[in-house]
Length: 298
Image (cartoon, rainbow, N blue to C red; front, side):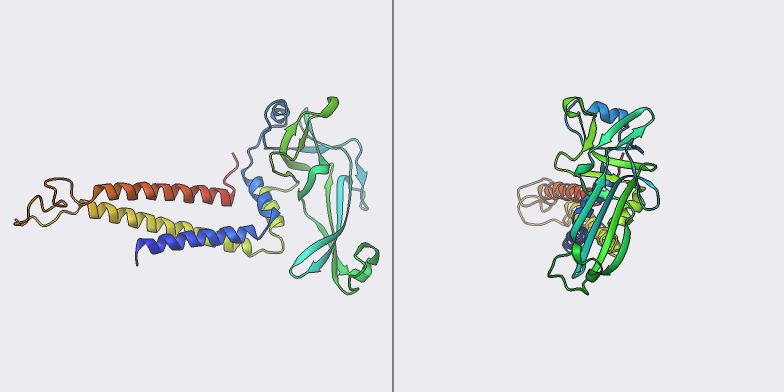
């Protein structure tokens, strides 16, 4: 078995891991941003609103002067209810209703508003789910839906007594309005009331084994690529360092070289080129791994 086989296996496994992660769709991107976005204080976020756009995370307590109550008399600032129908292995939204009021995230004496209208897939909370049939709510599904089609009501809500992480771009208010967090730089606005491990579990809901499969394939890919690269490097160094036989020969020139007379042993230029190629391959693999896993938030 050659080092090339390990390198090919490593690249293939990394590609397979990337494909598995991509099957999560928008949730994969949300998870990456939750894991990798740098965090700042609310005061720093307010200062950033006056300069070039930056995508950052803040943490604080949700506060509002106009919260409303749910059926259990909990004070809410946002409630989103979706009717979804089962199609194949996926749930497809056919009706959605959102109720929200203006709210902000507060840290000590500093506060920054949240553009709740920009929240879409970036809302990551523990959902409340109720499963039934289309016949249970015929007025909220398409007319051609079979009465026995699987249906669920998914409710996501944010309370004014919770702490939250909000990720987005701080922007100055329009016409003297408050500084707010919103979507920008091609990235979504994210709000979660959960700690990172819990948020990741919510994002992976419905496919609990896929993250494990992705982790295993990525680990196998990195190990295989490392073995192949190290093996190829050692082979190149060894081939360059080994000398030819010291026995005299009638051949012209130094028998330890390519016939051009005394010189370096082996083919050092090829070895140098291989070392550079290995370094580049390792750099690319490392950058790819960091991008796939989201890295570590400072």
